[in-house]
Image (cartoon, rainbow, N blue to C red; front, side, top):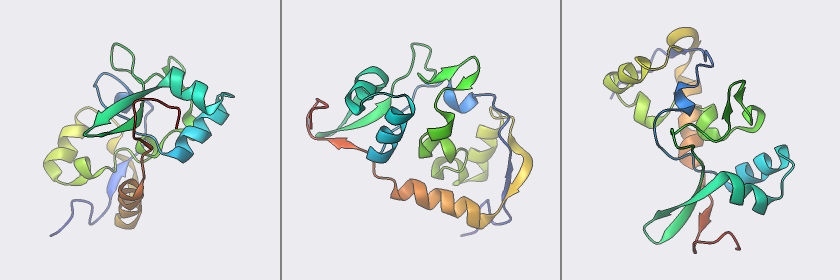
Length: 151
């Protein structure tokens, strides 16, 4: 099956924050991302988890996601941009090269109607896009087996 990114796709981030606001969702974190963000914020791991994360129940496990504000904006989105940009999670770094977006021209075009950086600027090769997809698929979100952070 021919991929929509066979010849690459154009994307340059305009820092509009479309991918960081307005719509509810999850930004699941790996153990490494939790540690990196906590260190960046000069917080203990537990303090970071308690103040900036939520536990999301998925069947009989819990996964860790960044909090959202009441308006669905990411907790780290400020007027000046992303407060943790240097250590932002893989999910954020890999946008818009997500399986759900590049799986069809229809989904890509639908997302591009909201993101002004898509179909503009830098041409990202098929190989680069596939690297992002592979990284996302290999990402191991932190899993808790209880509803507490005490593990």
